[in-house]
Image 1: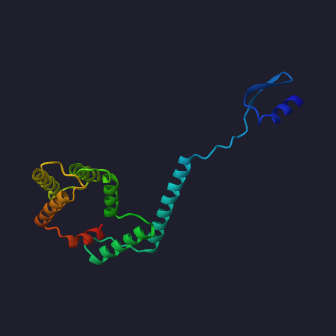
Image 2: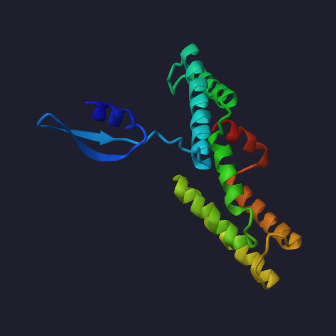
Image 3: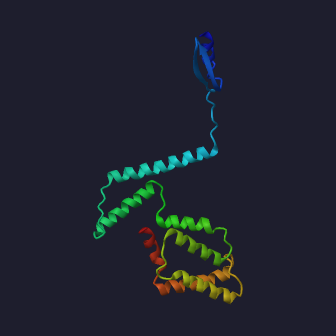
Length: 194
């Protein structure tokens, strides 16, 4: 009996399997090591911080939604305006991007190292498709045509740091916008609705 108690007292330091014989009976015993302190990994800390940030934003949004009464009626302009204001408040207080800000951030991060205009426009097309945004007006094809026109004038591929070439392309884009009925003055209005 003394042997088994001594063995059990050391069980926190040992690891393995064994048996204790006690008056014609076999008692299985397992030994376990002391719990090792696991070092905190950088990835674990990063995931924890991301989780806490998302949790904070979620709780902020829920707190606002609990206080606000929202009427969902797409036919009532006052209800639509009130809903838009509540969502804007949530985005501001929870530090969330609007849809247009999210798209703008994606465009900036994905295109910052692209040197030529053609790859830039093709990357914009890829982003649009991944986001599920449709090009109902056909503006994308018109922009590629405008790029080809400018590149034919320059007789070389258009680089984004070519100020003269980019000015020509911008002038072509403004013609396209005018043709489609898109005015620069209206862009902030479209952004506030997203």
